[in-house]
Length: 83
Image (cartoon, rainbow, N blue to C red; front, side, top):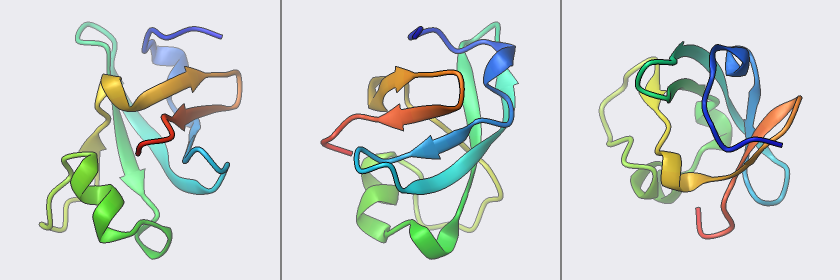
């Protein structure tokens, strides 16, 4: 487990604290340590979107806030429980 965003995160699932998939990492800016997520709109409630700072506009990908990450595993990035 690591807490640093690297290019290896591309393609990983983003899951909430219950293990529900809410999106996938489609791009990584390793220099900034930022993962960009394409959300599963059908599984992503407006409240969660708001807490992640993803707004209401219909973008195809959003930056993942580093403080929202609980852990990074080989298969997924899990969000903290409060998200």
